[in-house]
Amino acid sequence: MTFSIVARCPRTGALGVATSSKALAAGGGVPYCRASTGAIASQSFSNPYLGIDGLALLEQGLPAERALERVIESDAGRDLRQLGIVDKDGRVAAYTGERCIDWAGHVLGGGYVCLGNMLTGEDVVKAMATAFERSIEEELPERLVRALVAGQDAGGDRRGRQSAGIHVVQTEEYPYCDLRVDDHPEPVAELRRVLTIFQRIEPFLRMSSRRDDFTPDWEAVLRVREMIEESLQEDAAAR
Image (cartoon, rainbow, N blue to C red; front, top):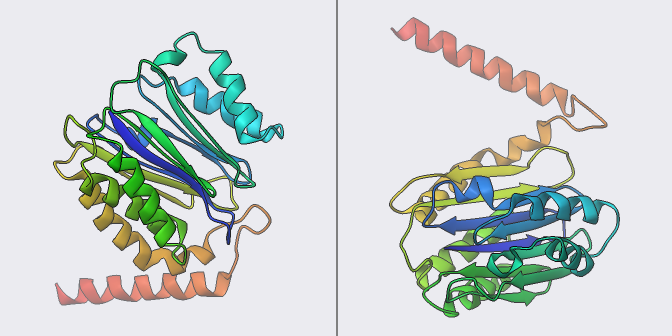
């Protein structure tokens, strides 16, 4: 009922998940990401604890494959689950339970996993993998959404379309990019549009607080504040 990509950027170390489904708010239920640790997509009659516990195991230093083995072993419902993991070093692992609804499966690549269930066919995950590999020069959010677009164009979810989301972490404990389309007739196209808006403000993210510096580039922050205040004053004067 869902197709997703889990990946790491080899240049920046960013980790992320992008997903789409004929289900409400897939972007809120599928991704589990932690900076400098790993990223996980948990789907198909999803068990959230596979993502939660998987991140805990990655944080302890287990590689992706071993973390996946541990969480799957602990779940009596494993035959219905689907899981993709990438760790902080770009190692990947995936699992598709025997009772996931066809078509269901995954593709492993260099630093990424494409996976899906209840899809129109294997071409969905193959198209996602190709799109991701061909966009190596782009930033991770862009690459993830390109993969989603390719998967949707190849057929996507057999049942139709409803939601999409992207969640990316970089160096901080909070997300670098966290965008969701929870209920929309064309969720992937809408996510593409919203990401384009995000990319316009992306240069300002260098002013965001860091754990080791709550006020980076503070002079730039003050300049932006002055511009906003001037704009508000101009709007008030024009009324």
